[in-house]
Length: 120
Image (cartoon, rainbow, N blue to C red):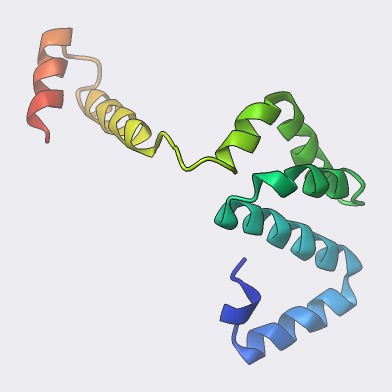
């Protein structure tokens, strides 16, 4: 999934050889790179074109992935367009869950609160 300009000549040649042997692999590579570019460049404006291309793919898993984006279309498009994210919140939630797992359910809410506050 590295950008093509970051591949070594050897890797680029090997990928071209493999894609020549398997047209499905070439299709997967192109669609995966396309989606990766959307994520890296916040290309939410091009999401519709990518999903339509993916839905017409011969690869069932990619069609399924593209179809799964449709129900949450607004959220997916916003995630690929806006600079806002919930990374900090998710990190905090993950840390709290880890602390809770460490206590194996033995703690009452007061002890859990104390551990969360003192763990920083």
